[in-house]
Image (cartoon, rainbow, N blue to C red; front, side):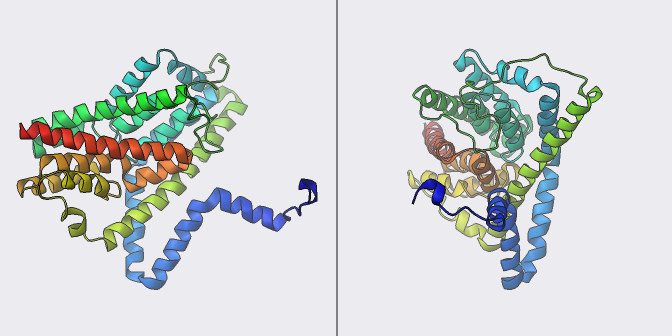
Length: 350
């Protein structure tokens, strides 16, 4: 049977296929709510409250990033922003890591900004540097970490954030040079820029885009598209997070983090991936565990792994990039958390 003789899907099958491809997060969201309503109706309200509250908490970051993406597309400034990330790769990676360490984004709040940068054609290496460093430290996090865990811990975590960004960005750059990460984005996300190879030919931006009806229309279209994309994936992520809070006792997360040797660091690294604590809420927990005998290196590994690859952040990353880039992101996060936790353990043991 030739390709032309294969039966073509009818309109119903085509519509269902389109619905499945485009709306999988909402379908999963609805299915989970249905199962929850049947099996544990009492948890339905708290889970929906968790989703709503979490979305509201990151709404300022979402709003700024959505407007930025829509504004860049409507004015044509996306070309200029993308071109600003071309040039010396090491400098761009260093600037990405430094900007990430200073930015006030959590692991979820950074996602819409990353989506906007990738859509503009910004090279993946500096974006990854920013991506890894940003959730780990910001000015307010530094102050709180110093107050709860001590200045030494705060300084070490800041240096770790920069090291994670630099190391991750460099690894991505080397892989791109070897041709291993071509076309890293999922279909429909940006222009597929990788290493800056597909940045569009620059045209003079039109800053007052509101005077042009076509550009006003593009602004609205880009804003709505970005908003809906982020809303469906983050809603699913926060719903799953609420179920972890409800059904996984905190004792199971923390009971294996005590003791000496490498095992607590390794356990803290793995446990940190699905960690349901945000960076601020995790500080007093880690402070209490350290006061009860947990080695500081395990605490650092937990904060690093949880900060970069918490469940909402991981799902959002999955939505943006193809599997090989997602796997690289997880590998860099886990490896970086374990290595830096071990290094901090050895430093504190001196």
